[in-house]
Amino acid sequence: MVKNKIVDCDKEIEFTPKSFSGSAGSKFGVYYNDKDRIMKLPRNGRYFHDVNISYNTSPLSEYLGSHIYEILGFDVHETLLGTYKNKVVVLCKNFDPIGNRLHEFKNIKNYFDDEDVINDDSDSTVLSDILKVISYSPLIIDKEATFDRFWDMFLIDAFINNNDRNNGNWGFLFDSNNLENWKIAPIYDNGNSFNNKLGLEDINRRLKSDETMKNIAIYSVVSAFKDDENHRINPFKLIYLKNIDDLNKSVIRNVFKININYKKILNFIENIPNKSQNGVEIISDTYKRLIKMSLNMRMEEVLVPTFNELIQYDEYKEYYDSLNANKIFHQEDELER
Image (cartoon, rainbow, N blue to C red; front, side):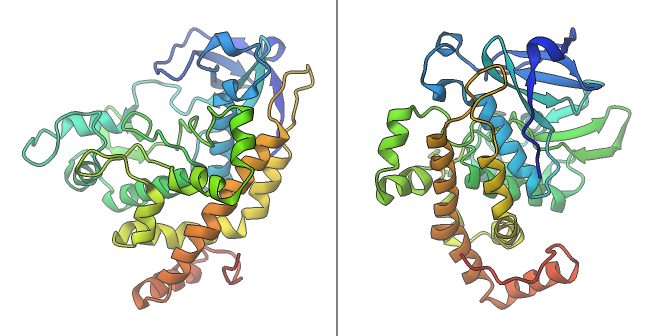
């Protein structure tokens, strides 16, 4: 069980001189509990004293999304919730303390210079271009592992509605002296999860009916990745179509894992304190309800039905059986919701 400790950053951290780039809010280098960390603050300071907690939930969303990844067994950056000057903040363990080793995907994409094959804009998130870079870039050594990571993030990001998985917030760790010392970086930057810009009035309106909930949980969800007409993709539509083999295999890998860990995920959410010990509001019961209902609808309406359809096909039943044989899944329960 994840312990939802709230760190009092006014008293329990030390600042370091390290600085970090990004547009999601202020970031400070800090030291806490013998570890080098990044403290992320909410984006917009003028909302800090509003009673509407939705305006400072970006650090909370980072914490929620990252811990759900962790519960599901992914290599993800370690996060802790904290408060600092009456704000909710998140402390992210710095998995690149040496510096200059993290190469974001946009840098890998920029290195790929065949303009006849892909769009040469490193920030472009056209899905077909992303897949071509993974296939052909000489810097990406393990193609299979990278495709698995990309589609696993695509699926779990859909599950947690992290709608900003762009080319600048996933990547690889390299040893500058030896290309062979290469690995996929831990999953990081999950701060756009769970509709964190919704106000209390909007949340209550969505909770009034199944149709308004389905709209926010499924129909209106978009990925940062785009189709060839430059339209943002609804990940659940793409999952439902079942026409991408690697995505289908990600459904097989992950939906079962979500299902057997589902109670743990719900308990984790429920056990987040509503307030810190020093009185800072962390999360409301109403927001918890929205999160849990959204997760449940995504499972019941899209993910589980797609899983059950896929394993009717021999090739995916065989893939699923191979995962079971290799103890990827640790129990034999049938997938029912």
